[in-house]
Image (cartoon, rainbow, N blue to C red; front, side, top):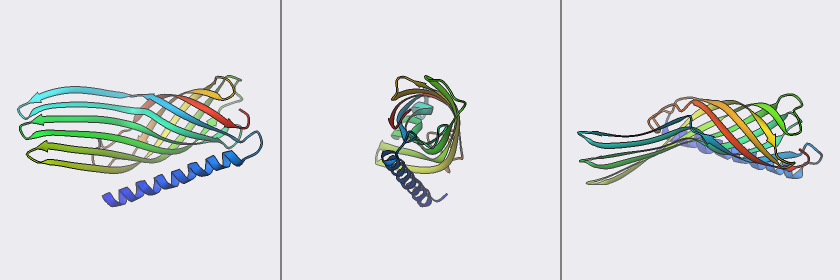
Length: 222
């Protein structure tokens, strides 16, 4: 895919998602009745793949660090009924660094993979006063960012931005701590198309994840 087309696609999708977030927030603030409930949450994840190492060769020394999996996200949820919730989230799927030091100089690469997902969460059964199980599906663009800097006889820098499409299937449980605070345990799997160029050494960052989220409820009722 052409780089300019990728950047335009990413910017356009991000603009539409931001507009959707603003619309949902405005609706939450203006709605009436017990169903006008929304939640803002912070998700903290555990990397499903963690690697770090140092190797030496005739060309120099190479040090790499890579952490992949849903490492964290900020989300917004809007109730559309007693059992259905619309969700929006932006997170970090992978982060990595790579440093090579040799006779030609020092080269450093940093990478970041960011998913922007819109989805639906469906609660199962009536639940209880302190917990409720759910299934979820989310989809949206996944943006890969990579910066490469070389310091030697000359100083050079290169930025790469690549886009892909992704979908995340998940399941979890809400654990209520009072009427306004919820702790959610979530597990899921992210599937994505390949980047046109490797980001962080990988063209595809699909994989499982596990997260814990802390959410604040606002609006009418629980």
